[in-house]
Length: 549
Image (cartoon, rainbow, N blue to C red; front, side, top):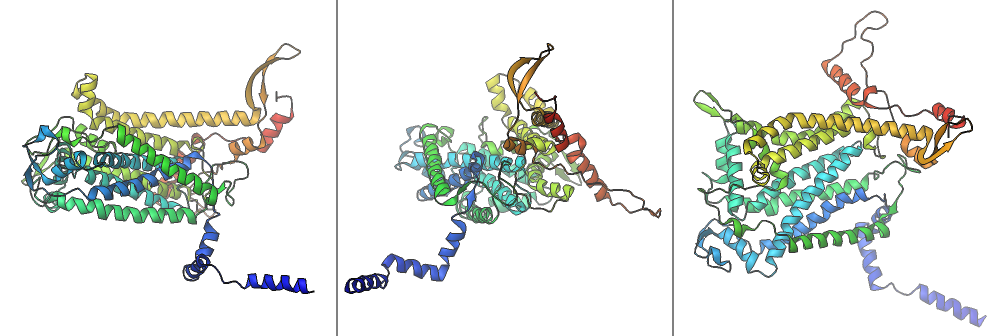
């Protein structure tokens, strides 16, 4: 009895021991922030294990690298157009009259320890960031991940892409070298082409006639504070919605609209994400260390009376320049005013081409009338029209990118710049149409192959001779999981107007929007845009009889 009492007393003493300092801090924080409940609900969130879902993380990590390197560069950059005589480390420019912005950029590149590396990492991260956003959005577009309930997240992503392009423009314009100055002159002329208000807009932004006295000082806070602040807020909202909505996943066994197959956020996905961040950072550091980019000392300082023939913007703005370069120099003179259609029309098409991508999800939702939630992704081949439109959009982007570098293409391929310009003018109308037709045909061909594989199995390459002399190829039946993947997609009938006259002979009013919706529905989801998947009866008939080998 005495021994048992001693043991119970010791246990009671251990139970009544005061909590440790760390436990008290955790209890204090949980009582005020609800951290435990929040962590319990989200740390075990399941993420599908597919490589394409990491494309968004490439964007996120590149953005973090941009912020880190950008903070370092702000410590040494001076956004001033005050003119000074350069007498620094780079001897070929000694004695040349430059702006303080250009001089500080040279100082960062040659005198600040690690400055050139950070500058190049920053620039490469910007390119990877925009590239990653475009590729990520294309993955979302082709797989239909933008459907309900993720339309708002699509808008956030599209806005981030637009802001990323504008931030890139403001960023490479800051050093005030000949390349950035030429790009600013290009932007200034495009703004001037806006009817009625173009002159006022240009004077407001540049502070007077180009190049202005304080434009870089105005551009600097926009680049380092305004745009990054908005983008950071959108990134946070984007990630919150990713956590809030069930994660999308590719079709497969055990995956439906109510369940997710994958790995928990903590610890598996968190460990992968952490390792992937260091991988992205390491690749960007390697690129910044071995691949030169934006060597401002080779371009020289900007002078309004000079222009470099090979001036090219970063790739994500090349298509906007291509629009203007290949546009005929049309002008319209009326009432003493000149309207530069050769600049204003392509300048207007630049946001409209991007807007077409941003509005497509809402167009598809209107055409289908589908208000259900979708958590299973489409296979691009099963939506040929959408896939063809996306491929056509990308081909238009590529053609205009060639137009934006027509002088570079001409010098490197020893071609006439006029030939390249006319090629781009024609290709702008021809290439997207051909791309759409070819892509759609490929998708339909892949659907036919899937249908054949479901009914007859996979080709094994083994040839068998039957007793009566016929040679056949032995087909291997697909597993249930493979059959599910190939047949799980829906093929709902497209929207139709229906009879325009009811049983009493009364004509029903049909609005123009209904007619347009019906036409689009037939074109996008009608019988000409899909191959009917096998029915259960067809499958049983083929696999249960002598037709199956």
